[in-house]
Every structure is written in C-alpha cells, then in structure tokens.
Image 1 (cartoon, helix red, strand yellow):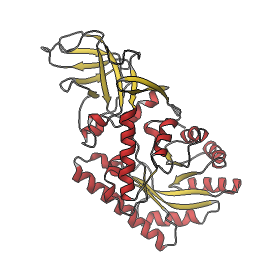
Image 2: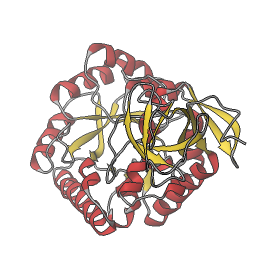
Image 3: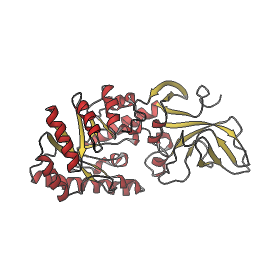
Image 4: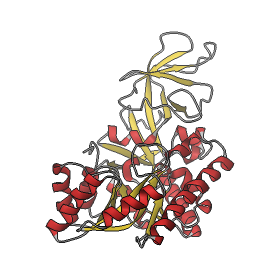
Length: 365
C-alpha cells in the first residue's frame, strides 16, 4: 500500500505518539532539574498541542506575536508570555483588551516600549507584568547584560502601571555549537550571564521572581541551568533535520514529516517531487546540507526546491524511484511548516487518526 495513501500530497503529518513522547520526555527532564517550562508555541501554533504541553506540566505558553496570543487566549490557553516588543498604538490597544481578559506577561527593552505599556497599565487600572529582555548574543533585541539592564530596569520601575517580574533572554547563538560538551558549555554560559544580571537587580532592590531563558538545546542541557526558573523550549516538540544534524535528536524523535509524491524522473539519478518551498521550507539546516532528510534513503539528497517542486538526486545507476512513489521527508526546520498549512494530519501506527488545526496560522502581527 502506498505511504499514507488516504492523504493527498503534499501532506504534512505529525506522529502523535512521537510528539507525546517528546512532550513527556522534556517535562520529566525539566522537573528533575527543578525548572519550569513555558513552551514556545511558534513551533506548532496549535491550541490542541498546547493543551498537551500544559497537561504534561507546562506553566503556560510563550508566543512571539500578539496575534498568536489573542488566538490562544480565545482557546482558553493561559497564562501567556508575549516574548516580543509591543510597539505602536494599534498593538497597545489590542494588548489592553487581551490584558483585561487573561493573565499575560510581556517583555520590554526600550523606554518608548515601557512608556506605552505604562499607559496601558494606568488606563486599565491593572498593572502590566513585564520581564526585562536581555540580549543573548544575536543582537536582535534586549538590553545588554549587567549594568545597562539594571539602569534600564530602574527607569522602568519608576513608571506607573508596570510591575517588573524578572528577566528574559534568548541565546540563539547556542545553535552554532556541535556536540554535548559544547551545548553544555553554552547553556552554562547563558545561565551565568542571566544570574549575574539578576544579582545586580536584587542589589538594586529590583524584583527577580522569574529568570526565563533556554531554547530546545539549552532545555536539553537543563542540568547546566542552575538558578534559572524557567525555559521556553519550542522546537523539541516536533524536532527536524537541524536537530538531527546537531546531534540533539534522532530521526525517530522527529514527529513532523511531509509526504510527497514522485511526479517526474527526467534523468537517471534525478526525481522530482510535488513538494517545494510552499510545503517544506527553504531554511538551511544546522549541521547538514540539502533541504531535508528522505526517510529510509540516506543516500538520496533533496538538493533544491522551487515553489512547488523538490529535486531529488541520487546514484544514477540506482533505479530508486518510479512515478507515483511516495517519500517521507523530515524538513530542515519544522517550525516553519505548520504556518504554511491550515491543518496537519495526526497519525498513529502509519494511519491517519485526526486533523490538528493550526489555529494561529498567519498570526504574524
């Protein structure tokens, strides 16, 4: 029988048993280290999956964008950390409405951002809970660790309508590492930087109830995060070819796959599939080349993607594929895939079991 013959291709599937194993495994790991989990939902954008994470012990969720938070709040998923600057009158108006409906925390790294939140806190009569964002090395946002962050926090503390709850940092440079020793060292370094800044905050009388850090790699190395109160792992729930390339996951840990059909074999050693950038992703993988893993065919390379085509390359003497054959692909970056689809197929034991709605698809504002 053809692979998932009941699904039209290209089809995005999530193996529900693998995903549950990933969720439960991370929950056990963090609990053993005494660290709470506030998982980032950008990896799946699904209220149903978020509920699975909460059931496993997560203390809430993290979103990137306000629109995601609005969708998840409407689905009854809270508390929510919006880990993104809220800048502009339109965002503040929407945030004010959300703030009055559920428990929501956000981050701040600029005086203009803090003043906007202060105004919302005053207008609603409900103080805004904020985390001071620390630049974790990507330089995409955040205050510099140490005295810069402390002086900024003292300025924010003086504003009415705002309540500082602690610190948040994203140390995305951890993805540059390879091997457990290097990941462990990177996790120790991010924890040390956050704890040093937290100590300066406490010396100044600033509250530090929350020290929020951690990507999926850092969360896996949680034994190195002594003193951190919570992590925000996201990618772990699905994993992908990047996780495999970095040695953080195996193919068996990758819950999200794309099923594609061979639609052409124009030359020996070449086959074209019906999945391109609009079904997979053009993102490069950490630690490997190509655009995904062809499950069961380690010798086959997904060499290139057009919008609707994927190009397989392999030994021209090996007659591997015929028109109509189906292949299973682990994409380079799983977090991109749900946002390309309204729903994905939940599968068990090689068969479709349920549809999973991507509730926050396209929620990019």
